[in-house]
Length: 493
Image (cartoon, rainbow, N blue to C red):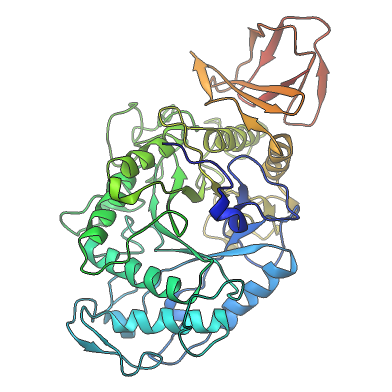
């Protein structure tokens, strides 16, 4: 089974007019609204708009921050992806990661905007919030007789942020499935052209803070956890199950978790020196599935549950972790470390935008984490003092675009309008991906050797030049060899 980018039923979401589309639809992920990315992405995943902020007291709603995000995104022609999380203390009775107290009540009588409604399986507090949200987004104070099309201001929703991470969810997966089912059911009643992602799970290791996760009988491994939530959803009475055209699955594309330092590169889950992550394909709490294999791991979950049908896969957050985690092992802020960060970005894009190796599935949306955070994968820097951030040991970039931003722009420009000719493959440490455009064939090549260059035979007289990540063009002048480094080059006719 293959997932093809820009499915007909999803054209509104993934083939947005007026924006260049690339394989895997590469977009900036979460960001603040203070400095908008250039070029503007077609979709952004907003940060900080959570249930606790939208409903600080039961029945008291404040959508001003959400409205601000929608307005700013719309002014740039971008759509918004909204991810649910952040349970208010009045609902959970504790912190923001435990489910609402009424999650398993029976025959619960709801309050406005569901006054007069009795839910046989409870969860009124959450249902009230999602209902009020959809009424706000769709400009109505009643449930429409049929789902609205072309009316609602957000079309893309995501079930929960990293539910396999104890920092965002701390309960069994039946309760998580109940939350996602309730949201999905209400959204589909109001909005006929909305899309709901089941997810998301944090990839790389077994969850970002798995060592603090105390809930028995649940997995923190991202693919297993996603399967467990789906199975729990399938077992719910009268559930509105995920289906093609209305739903997809989402994950977060990271190589590793738990402060693995230096961070592994996209083709592997080995850190060249960290004791947390030194063995390939050996399950451990820090490193599990590399970037190039994560789409196949999610597709395995789909194919072993035939009741799901064919669902698209989105990666709604990913990259490396702190800016200092991708390093030459000498100085995380030196020139070689910046080159490694650029290499990581380019290879991360290729690993997720190209068809997967076993199932040939394409991750249809990929979002980098993040645009202007001063510590994580920074593409734009405000130049604030390091002492004012959560990463005081990592010097800040000067004000403006960082080196990895130029890599992002260059890679997405090269891939604009291209198709991959199969998955990326390797022979030893040499990797390549082939792309085509009308009347054009290109080949990305690189080595996974960290700081060395290698002369490699091209094997074809078709190519006459290559481009590097600095934007330079070099003529081959008849040579049948090219020098490759850890930063991909693009061979061209």
